[in-house]
Length: 439
RNA sequence: GCGGCCUUAGCUCAGUUGGUUAGAGCACUAGAUUGUGAUUCUAGGGGUCGCGGGUUCGAAUCCCGUAGGCCGCCCCA
Image (cartoon, rainbow, N blue to C red; front, side, top):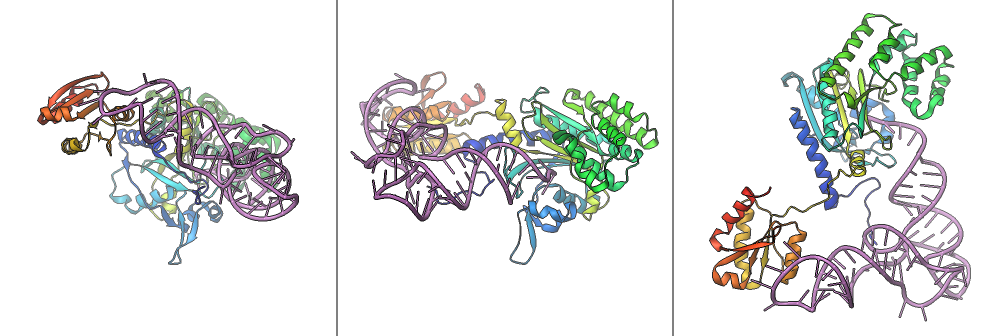
């Protein structure tokens, strides 16, 4: 058996798997471009401190980190956000606003692999920098929806759960929680859906048992699932901050509604996202059946660029992972089968006919056609089978009889018809077939 | 890092109470078929039975360890 195996959680892409990966990347890239986002890339290996600065020392246990030969503490990138913040921060004053960037890149996390989670995976990251208002969220969430919908998935297949850490902060502040308690409560909210009441255990241990009246109010807010319910719940807590924030909510939902995306969006205050650096709207995309891990996650992080050494620059972004996205597409039968895209197959009689065929083969390839031929002498029957297997539309037949007459037989493999063409016209006949033809 | 289940050909699997040289289907290669894609038939290549150790006259089979896979927990940027 194989003496060497790939490392756990690292994937190998055989041609059929690579074709599926390309299909996903192509749609993402094309969709981002239609929204006016520009593509970038950055180093795979970064200073370890870049991630510690953002997420704290304990993050190191989740990283592929090591000391390089120059004594530098480094890590394979586990995410793009710190990197893109550095890139944007370094040139913030020279970049036209709003800054709309995306990337498709591989990331590495030292975690136990599970369904939908590998140690090496790709993410499609989209971010908008420089716009503090909900207009940026409208643009970004519209892109998120379209980047999933574009595969043929509909509102019956996935949805985006939309929440707001600001309103959570305002609400908990109004209930009298201090900053540390608020962090504890947000941690409990994050786990509540999975664990139920046990989610508050960690809070109770750290801050003392939660007053049952306050707990009911927290749970009531966590169950807010619509703008109307949100307005109703907050009516008891009047104030300028909350009034202004509700106006942002109406603008955001109004904008997404005007784009025709209302059916993809659900208000859900059960979402807070674990990361401390999110500062406003947060959202996650899920499959409707609830069978898979989150397809995408994102939110606003207005302080991060500055925290990482750049200027104060508001930002909002999301990432879609390729693993869960691929699982969902395969579940719904939306991952296209791997098909070869050969245009022309040259059927060659034998060694004597090879030279004539090679001249046309190379000429057609130089013109951009995808041309295949048998690499060594093969029976005619096998060659036609190979042509069909390769998905070729046309076969060019270089047999002794044809070449003696100065012609090449051109066979339309779909229509199963053929005609003889003088050799010097082969190129133009092929060109006509593909330009005037079906596709 | 913790727990459960699993591992025989490229893939899906069979393999009797432990008994000769480990099988099938699919896939691949070739032939039937030096001039036309299907079907069919025939043949072939491909295995240190995940790896290491133990029990035994004898291990794919029983025992121990270990690696890998799947699933769950922790975590999830």
